[in-house]
Every structure is written in structure tokens, then in C-alpha cells.
Image (cartoon, rainbow, N blue to C red; front, side, top):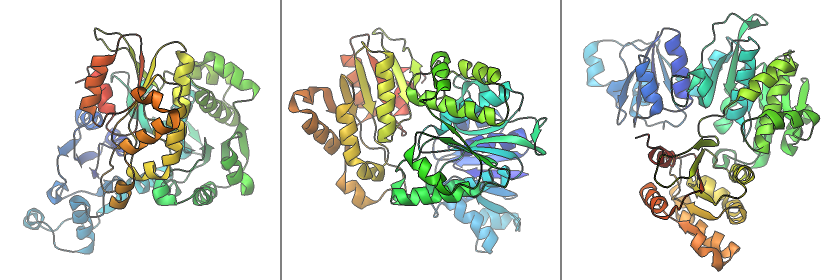
Length: 473
């Protein structure tokens, strides 16, 4: 088949593109900018166009068009594909080429992944926090146990491709091991836009549930309601692995119809996990306990589960530690955390790991709407972090997903002002609004003395600061 991906550089879309490449399909794609994932795909044989989306990027003979959830409805390529299906006027290049395939299918990424889940025995990991790390941990346990899973994950895992600096976000199994007659698929199942309702899971892992994506859900009640609908998708033989310590998960499970296997960071197994794990933080103990509980539900021996978990090196942009080769020696931590809870627990984990080092946090809020909904939470969290210096960058604006009225209500500058007000004016020199990556880089180079731990946090382009500081460009 010939499959074209719109927004192919996205962390989820690029994973499923790698999957189809490995199956021998012809892959084309487009994205606005080049990134690490587009480079990986090009190296594996995908034909990718970088720059503004154009109708002409859609291959004339494509069988399937798969588009990222971030792609807007007025996207030129998406409109072109839909025009084919509705027999509307096409671009001049297509008209000259002749009649296109009327059987072309147009699918969103969740729809495409949903179709894939029907072909496999699917383990889906969901929750507000911990999805990527828990999915990666489970993957290593399944591999150690010989389950040979195919894995689609929203981060990069070193063990999936040791030839790449940070690994990759897709592992394709050979299908030799089956459960109920199907090979095993492990996915990170995102709740945003209720995407996970497109999937057909056999096992659901629930890590945590908190208010998030309120631009879509509006309130916690709607989130809980949607998660209840999600667990009802399980077939008769399905099962649930759930965090005992999460009150909202307990609400979701009140009407669960399937067996529930619970885990807790307060139980005996957590002590052993805490001893063997290389990655810091109590939240990672909980993630590992989720993986261990799943292993036990699948009758995988504890010896194999503990062996796999003891080898886990962490994942890309999840407490990713670097030692930049610069005249001034310091430790750099790159982390994707952007929800108030994620920021709090990750910084606490850093303080526990380096109790005596000067700790600096560079934080980029993600989306105006998220910052608006969590403004008070961010003020409280940022003002109580156990850090020596806090630097807040401008809010990362997600194109097409922001309301101008929201942009007028919040800003990083206002956030910093409120944090200083809560902490006290005597801390003003240690809580800074530094708008751009360029200026933050300059500030760090001018002010780091050596021995500091610098955490670069956020889900937006703040990662480019990590790239610069580690000399990757």
C-alpha cells in the first residue's frame, strides 16, 4: 500500500509510520519543520516534504491518508484528500494526472491506530501522568519474557534502536508469540480528544487521572465519565491494571465489569522496586509497580520482570540527564513535564537525587488555555518548588488550538509576578521571566558557576534549549 502522513514528524504519527515502513508499505509524508523523527523516517526510506502543507503533497495514487490530531480541518492536504472522496474540484496537478483513487481512505492517527489494535492482543496504557514511562517499562518486561511485542509509544526508548542516540518510538515484533491467537501490541493510549475511545484494548493500564486537557473536557467529571466509557470497551476476557492510590481512578472503577489488578507505591513490592530502579522519583516506583502488576496478571515470573525493570534507563525527555561538555561543569536534566503535578513531583525527585546541589529550573508553560485553567495551581506549585532559581519562558503557543481571548488573560510575565508576590519580594532575583530560548541560553552561559543542576522542563520547543546546551546542533 501507499500511505501518506500529514504531520508525520509528530511523536505518535511517526511511530505508526515506522510500523508501516517495517511492513513494507510505501510511505510519504509532510510536516512544517524538520525534526529528529522526520530524519529517522527519511533514513528508513520515507519520502517526506518539509514546509507549508500543499495539496500537491498528497500522492496521486495514495491508498490511505493518515493525519495528526494537531492538523487543522482547513489544512490544504487534508482538504485535498477529502475532496477526492467527495468528488469536489482537485488541484491542477491532479486533474492533469487523471482520475485519482476513489477508494482512498482518510483516517486520523487515533482511527488508524484503532484499526491496528483490532489485529492484535492490545495492552493500552492510559492516564494523565506516567503513560510513556510505564509503557516503556512494560515493553522491556514483555521483551524479557519473550512476548515479542509491537510497541507504539509517545516517546523514544533507547532499547528499541540502540543505533540512535535516544532510541526510537516504535518497535515491531515478529508475531511469533500470541495471546488468544493474536500477536501482542502495546500502545500509549492518549486521552486528549477522547482518542482512546477509538481503540480495542484487551488490557487497560490506568496510571493516574487528574484534570487536564480542559479545553476539550471542560471539567473533571467529564474526564471520569470518558474513562468509564473507555474501560467498557474491554472484551469479556479483558482486565484492568489500576493505581490503588489514585482517588479518581477508584471513582472510575466503581462500575467496572472486568477483573481489576491493583498496585500501590505503599505495598511491599514497591520496596524492592525502589532498591533496583535506576530512574529516580516515587512516581517511577509507581510506574514500575504497574509494569510488575501487569506481568503478574500475565503470569510472567517476577524474576524476569525485576530483571527487565532493573535495566530500564529511562526515556527521552523524561528526567533525561546530560553532562554538557562546557568549561563550566553542571548537570542538565531534560523533562517533558508541563502539568502542575508533573512539575512538582519531577523537581522533588531532582532535589532528592541532588540534595546539596544548587537547583535551577527553566520552565516553559505549554498552551495558553492550559496555563489559564491551571494558573492558580502553577502559582502555588512554582512558588513552593525546592529550587534555588526559577526561570519561566514565554508560553508555548500550539498553533490552531488557542483562543485569542485566552491569550489576553494569561502570560508568563503575569505568572512570574504572581509567583514573586506569593514567595515574597526578597526572592525576586531568583524568580525570572526570560521570554526566549536565545535569552535563556545567554543567561545560563553568563551566570552558571559550576556544580548546578539545571532542569529544562516543558512539552514545547524548550527542548531546543537542551539540544543547544548539549551541543547536538
